[in-house]
Length: 105
Image 1 (cartoon, rainbow, N blue to C red):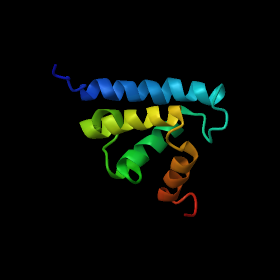
Image 2 (tube, rainbow, N blue to C red):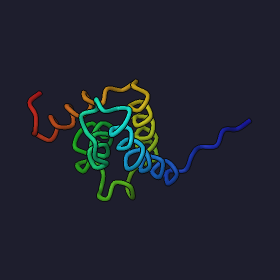
Image 3 (cartoon, one colour):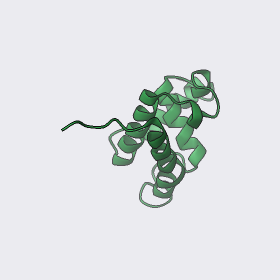
């Protein structure tokens, strides 16, 4: 059986739901130890990690219109890993802030 590759638009939609709805809801309820609560913070952290630096230095704005397929795949996977506790949101946030000059390495 051949596995179909998800469309980039579907992945971006999934990333949007995860960062705008799912993750902020979890931050307010079961994941209160997370260092951020707002949707734009989750988006910043995930996109910076996907890009290996400040995301808008690598992707045109708005990101949801310009993510490449592999970036969208990585963004969804990272969101899911954060939710599952397999990726350290605090460490990812700290690194994002370092890249942005808002925290020392």
